[in-house]
Image (cartoon, rainbow, N blue to C red; front, side, top):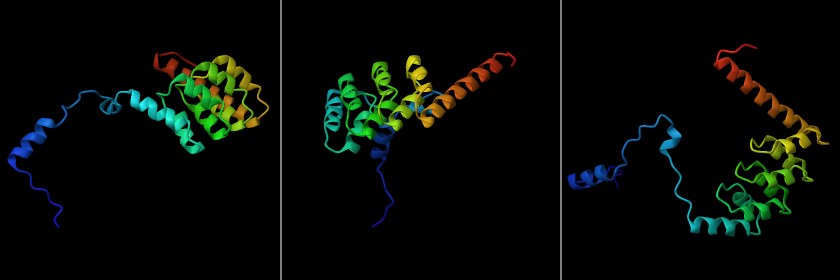
Length: 160
């Protein structure tokens, strides 16, 4: 069987007519828009969040489109891996991240520390964390912020 495809002129015209218009955005990511969030997608996230397998619940915890009550429930999951996924999700509400900053699991607190949307009061608490790993992540994130601030100053013509 041949893998060469022969289209008729009518098929080629139809393919050309159905082709998406070229986008002019300079940002390549803008060319790949996500589909709209529908009720069926949210229902699917709810089913994932209720699955007995913690790896499946992690997928729900990483979703940017889960309802707040799903984030809340998964932030109290008995599996630390699920809570860690909630902690690193940038769409989780600040109140949940604040609570996870006091989680018993070091890995969960570490992911809270590197989440760019964690509230400042939670970062202050994590700076005094009993875990050297978590404190190191807080320091690392602070150094990144300082480097970005320095780069911004250099871009506008400031000096050190």
